[in-house]
Image 1 (cartoon, rainbow, N blue to C red):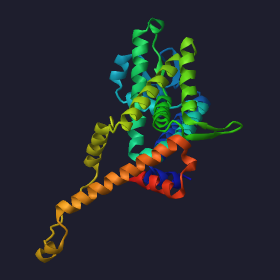
Image 2 (image 1 turned 45 degrees about the vertical axis):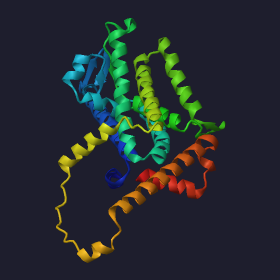
Image 3 (image 1 turned 90 degrees about the vertical axis):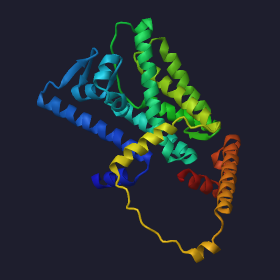
Image 4 (image 1 turned 90 degrees about the horizontal axis):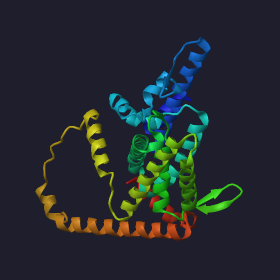
Length: 307
């Protein structure tokens, strides 16, 4: 089983890798917790008035901005950290199901930026609320979980293809926009004074980012483009560049080769035609649902998302 997980993490898509990271951190936290309990070790701390395993404390973000600045890694690690089995189960099931739809429609490369930036947006709204709203004054509270990131993925997908049909047990097919709207409504109603108000505020922060992200995509703007540049820069530091090969030009072959301008024009035309077909398929999904696409249209959309 470990070998299979190792293979999937190495060769699987971004969605699978994020699921494995979340599951791995959850297992590590709980194994250490079990050891602490059975061994009688006092490995727990009262961070922000909440009893936490020390590992969770150092992975979770906090409403205390200064504490977060002392532990800058928590801006990222908090969104991969779960302590409760139901918390991670619900988050990962929704993330896998909706994330697969998002990836098929908009490509694998957009999954990680949306996950990270959605989580950061959720944390930002959480920090603003806890430090500015009177109801939270004087309190300090930790935050963990991928919920803000998952909400970003859900709202982005629902905004991009609002009528995408989701089949629910005992209910039947229902457009994705209604499911996303239900989750947002639950988070809004929780602001009346639920036990996890901070978590619901973070969910709304992720939802807002997902909505804005998808709206910008429909206008041809990708607000995560600088994230791609950063990832490529980091990857370039660790990936060895191939050696440059010297190629001798064949002058005779050059005479029979298609002029560069003609090749460029042909490529541009093909790209425009391809994008027009993608837009037509997405319009069809919005009007009649993904299931009404022909097999050829589904294959075309899937192959286009991989490029």
